[in-house]
Image (cartoon, rainbow, N blue to C red; front, side, top):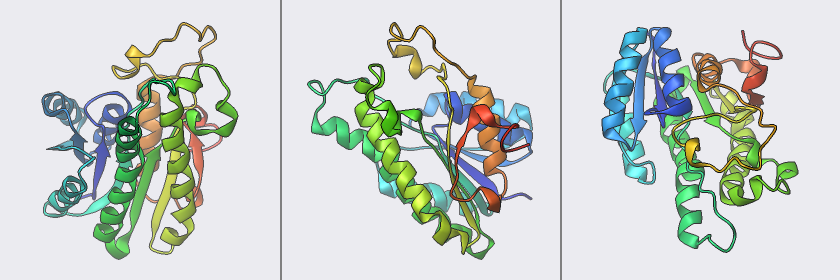
Amino acid sequence: MLPAIIVTGAAAGIGLETAIALGEQGRTVALCDIDGPMLAAAAARVRAAGGEPVVIAGDLRDEHAIVDLVRTIMSRGSLGGIVHSAGLFPQLSFAESELEDLDHVMAVNFRAAFRLAKAGVAAMGSTGGTLVFLTSGAGLLEMASDPFQQHFSLYGASKAALDRWALGIARELLEANVVVSTITPGAFVRTSGTARIDLEEMADLKEIDASAVGKAVAWLASEPRMHLSGCRLNATEFGETWGE
C-alpha cells in the first residue's frame, strides 16, 4: 500500500482538487480542514476518484492539532508527503489591518507549515517523502507595488516568508530523502474562497482552473522527485518546463 498524503485546506479549492487528483492515483489521502461538514463531501469525491479518504477536521492554528493529525495517519500506516494548501488571504488596507489579522494569517500560512514539516519529517523517518507548500505571486517583491496586490500585503508577506523558509531548508532535508518544493498557481484561481475578492481593477486577469493546479500539486507530492528539491514551481508551466 502506498504511503498516505496529508492535504490541508482539503474541503474546497486547490486543496480539494489536489486530494481528488491523489485519489485518482489510488492513494490514501488525509483530508484536513477546519470545515468539518464540507470535508464529508470532499471525502466522497476522493473516494469516487478511487482514493481512500481519511477525514480529520482541525484548526491549523493549534499546533497540538497538527501533531495529532500526523499521529492519526501514522497509526493507520505510513506517511509519504504533506501538501499545505490551507491559507488565509484577507483583503485589507494598512488602516484596516490589526495585529490580530497578522497573527491569524501567519499562523495558518506560515507557522502551520513549519509545524507540519517538523512533525511530518519525524514521522517519515529514513524513507523520506515530500513537502509541498502552496505559495503565491503575491509574495514576490515585484508585485508589492501592484495596486491590486497592495490590499493583500499580509497574505503576500506570509507567502514570502514561506518561500524563503521552505527553499532554505530544502538542501538540508534532501539529506533525509525529503524533497521540499513550493508551487504557485501562476494565475488567478476561482474558488469559493476567492469569490469574495473584488476583481474590478483586474481587466486582463489571467486565470487557471483549480483542477489544473491540483493535478500539478498531486504529481509533485506523489513521490520524492529529487531534481525538484528547492524549486519554486509554477502550475501554469506544468507539463511544459517541469512535470509530466
